[in-house]
Image (cartoon, rainbow, N blue to C red; front, side, top):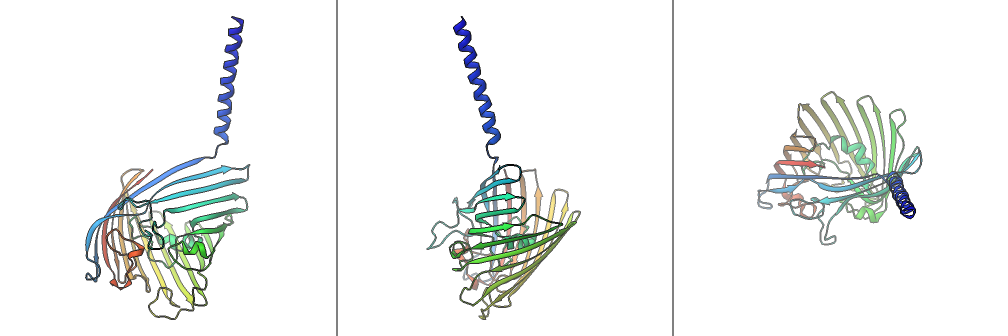
Length: 351
């Protein structure tokens, strides 16, 4: 009996130790956040020149994704961060970006939207990998507020670039700075397809509900001697009303008329949205020289629940920038199509 009591006591002690160790492991394990977003639309597209691209009605993905976030505290003032986000083309049943679907040189397209690792502390944050670029975050994001596939085209910059080193300062009295550098290898793997290094700097100032930003996107030589994009943005939230404006201009050695990066090419966007109950009404008018030209984008979102949203949008461009063949993307881009319009209705499910 004594032996049985000893064995039972030892077993209880072992179980307690395992529970204690498991509890310690759970406390020390890095917080992992799994997430995803399914975004699919039914669209009717009518190009202006139907001899080059027939009008059609079809499904199209609106940038669905699956991802994981990791944030691991390394003491009181340091944290190790990481993010991996997989692109999902729900309309074509492929693991790739619906826009950057690949071509003869890159058969699979952009499979990962984000793949980065970083360190955060009282010094700010530094990250490496494929990630959102500081110029986009500061300048283009304030007017990139639509839900469909046609969101985000009315800008000259790129969203994410591989093999990028980025640094952002802590905010001090509303002011913050961010910078990034990517070598030619990372730039070639982005949607810009420029075989040159790229660096960016952006400054942001926030006071109350107003945000001001300025940025530079230096795209390297690219055969022109210089290839820089300068941008300004301003936004303001007034209760249910949100207003934003963006301005960009190219400073390049490219004098070729009609080219994307012709010296002096400008873009200006005016965006407004208004929340009315569960509905949010959105309108943007833009002029983007040699990439869409005059653009009108109108939309309405309705929040059905915390996770579900439906949307309807109308998109019109005077020159081709976003329109492509049925369920196509960047590899189907044809500037001679002459623009057109699209009507899209879709659903978004976040989890």
